[in-house]
Image (tube, rainbow, N blue to C red; front, side):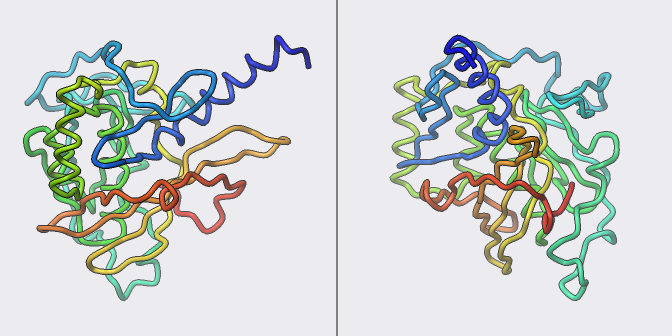
Length: 276
């Protein structure tokens, strides 16, 4: 392969795996750090450089015509920019005594409206485990189950990547210390966090193919999300990121972890993973 072709191939490969790389939400001293979409692929703090177009109206209900994501999969467009929670069937929730307690998928995510484009990112809505409602534009009300933890992990991580400067989301749905909030506020004051990532970034925030509950207890869940990555040696790969969720004040919140704990790992099989 020529030297001219190699950089182009690298850029294409990086674009394909960005859906997983961006998911690796890294919070250092309360400042959100994002994957730089340049050739180097090194982490950097994103600068405001445009907004993702949207025709959604706050407070609206229903859906516009569905679209497809980067991989040709259906994604619904809610008329409310913050998303459209779905009617719930609590009887569909798994119980701890069920054999598939840790491995079952939440209900409704494979049906229409199960994945919605919110602020440019594809996020999951179930009919069994939440989110049950919107509060100040935030999706809240997840079930106290492994499925609820997985839903919250995807929702919170993707939303915060799409809107780094959403302070309400950061302080309410991320378990952070006063010192981390102070650092975050300083980053806002310095205009180092964009209010809305542009479409060239959010287009890679697509639905992960699966999740895995590594550990679950009433107060904490360790969740892994697997997003489709590049094809290497004719084999599909996935980038898997580990997220720590804590049950706090009646809902799941994301707990910042060290970069090592949340490091993205690549797997070539989803055996043992739960498909949405």
